[in-house]
Amino acid sequence: MSKKDLQLDIRGDHKEVAVIRLTRPAKRNALSDGLILALRDVFENLPATVRAAVIDGEGEHFCAGLDLSELKERDAGQGLVHSRMWHAALERVQYGPVPVIAALHGAVVGGGLELASACHIRVADDSTFYALPEGSRGIFVGGGGAVRIPRLIGAARMTDMMLTGRVYNAQDGERIGLAQYLVPQGQAFDKAFELAQRVAQNAPLTNYALMHALPRIAEQPADQGFLTEALMAAIAQSAPEAKTRVQAFLDGRAAKVKKA
Ligand SMILES: COc1cc(/C=C/C(=O)SCCNC(=O)CCNC(=O)[C@H](O)C(C)(C)COP(=O)(O)OP(=O)(O)OC[C@H]2O[C@@H](n3cnc4c(N)ncnc43)[C@H](O)[C@@H]2OP(=O)(O)O)ccc1O
Image 1: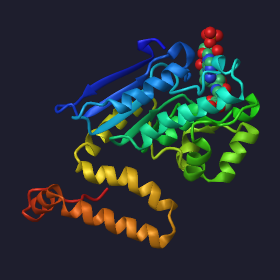
Image 2 (image 1 turned 120 degrees about the vertical axis):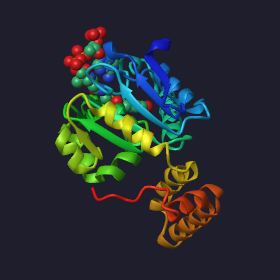
Image 3 (image 1 turned 90 degrees about the horizontal axis):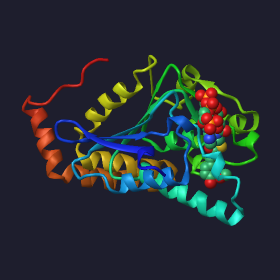
Image 4 (image 1 turned 90 degrees about the vertical axis):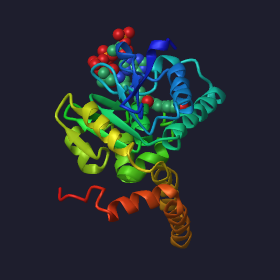
């Protein structure tokens, strides 16, 4: 991978937002092995000041999925290793140090949708389209998409996408839960950055609990889920930062919740 295939930029007054950009526009940000490893490394080495991240893609498309030119030579053993490498990288995104907001535009396809689905919030612009062309390429998802995507849109919709090659446009993608925010073309990054700055102001422990406990609670039987929730609630509310923040509200020094 050329160093230029992934860029990291630390922004904000307190260097609190990491902007991570796929910069392989000539190949529609297709995920080469080098790019996947660089993604993993960047999430493992974020500066301590960073409290939230935005990931986007340079050029006309967010990401065209796996770099198909690298797939040709792989046997089954290498395929298994590759898939586990991709799992490790996307686990660093989902269970890394900070919440990650995907700014989507153009193609969000195959592995690109797997990457987006590992992020915590997805912002799409009007040009966005989503597809899983693995079926027609004779392959399968390999980055955890078989686990994460049905949890976003349901197994029936994912099955249809993979079997028929169905493409969802930006509006339908938002409707079925692939994105939480839909903005006019060209505005996804700005919206994602604004959200990242807001997320960065939360107590880090709250963000951490949300990222790490919530997906697990969703998978647990109710009695275990209630217990995990109670433990997280106990840890969070006993932290000094929670006491300071709650007192600020009680003293009238913190913002009220405003009607949308
Ligand atoms: C099996 O184990 C796995 C699997 C996986 C994950 C699998 C997947 O991601 S499958 C999906 C793969 N992606 C696709 O099938 C999409 C292919 N691309 C397109 O359909 C289009 O390029 C587009 C994204 C809609 C953009 O169209 P356009 O703007 O017209 O650009 P093009 O002219 O088509 O492309 C320009 C340039 O980029 C090259 N390119 C595009 N996509 C890819 C790609 N996915 N891989 C490699 N190269 C790509 C294209 O060939 C052109 O190159 P030139 O040299 O001709 O300029 C995960 C983990 C596992 O273990």
